[in-house]
Image (tube, rainbow, N blue to C red; front, side):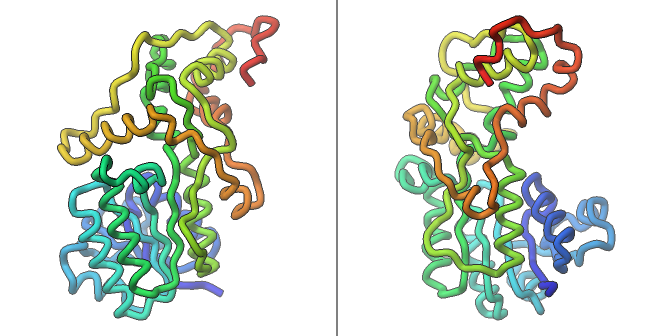
Length: 299
């Protein structure tokens, strides 16, 4: 049975993947966006486009008409909790039966006194739980596509890799796995007790990552001395501070724990870090010389 699902953040990296999966399943998708022209470019007439904004109550009411389920995703900002609270309230009033909220990582929410992004998500989660709507809270760990972007750039440029997070281990999660989990839960309309923590199947240090890159490229790969700086975030002061706090918490080893949530929900293991790196480094991988004997130790 097809359901009408409202997706927020549908023009972003994760939102696009969730939208595509829902369409492939056969659900009807409506997207809430401030940029309808971008939604048209991405989806054409495959989705129903609702132009609106979290701060415009009327636009939320219109977007939620005849919607069964909601995927709640919004960018890191000082208004995240207020924006998500407004949409949760509007969804409750519209009779939405189920919400899947994309939240922050557990280690930011559990340390919200030291994470401004974690504090915003913590407040939004609490409000969602208090409204009594069926819901699932997804807490993905560090995304491969974001956390390892500087590593990929360095490898493609032939430079030593940044020593991300002071060498602490991280159980990176592929954004495609996050999207698949979200789409399946939205389609099923299932409520799950407790936050669902999404991680990869093992944790990797910077040295482990360098070893994988070395194996893929079949050449020695070094690591920069000292800890790598957090990735810039487009000049937004709130987001820049949030990302710097992420780096501090990860460097303490808080992103190292591994869960079996992805395997339990999808019936398969999470995408491997090696597979991700092979895709990202494909232009160099195809040009690399033959492997020397013994280099498979990093697989």
